[in-house]
Length: 278
Image (cartoon, rainbow, N blue to C red; front, side):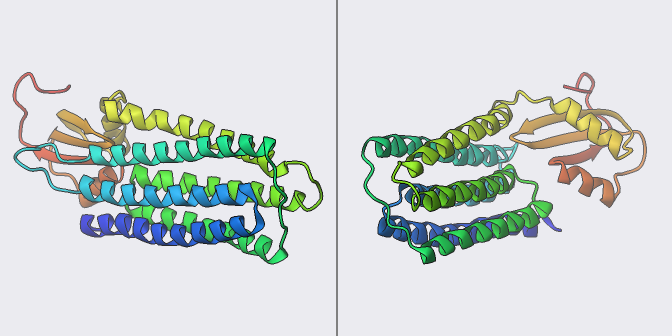
């Protein structure tokens, strides 16, 4: 797939994802308000956070694909990591809101009105999220963006969150205890722990603490690329690499394999002395 189409696949995934998430949060806000179920309302806020995340993701993918300019000769690859970071922060805040609202509901727990049709509609939203996961996965095959990876993780988490929401909603029919508040706290803690784990890799990428040379050398070995020397620079998860080959040129298959690893190579006849490797 050509790079232009690769970028389009990434941006379109964010646009369609945003539209679907707007629909999901609207449905859950309506049902949550109608039934007075805090966990359904929280699930709706989770989808609203996804909408903002899709907007940030689309902007990040678009900016990361911009060609280098005279002012920014190394390109804009780091925008992708910045957008991913913003998405995770949004999801973190949603998790914190879950916990806050749920604790409040523990002390003030108005009655919940159970409606079977609303239970079925919320269950259908789980199927929608599974479909979104596969949609992001299809886009990820063409565009190995950390943003799309975050979207896939979030989609699977949302399936689990909605399942927990349905559990609390169903149990509310059997018990007067604040079940939805207790499960809301569990969901919030789960989201925060998951986001903290994923943030580590994004922050490392943003500050450049990951091993660029090892990634380049592993990719060269895997694709049987023989080289005399190279220079590599990391910008987000994108690596720009200048390589002096022992002989010949890189094949289209080798170039594509490297680009799938976010390694973009320029070959030269020789490197300046003293610049063999960073």
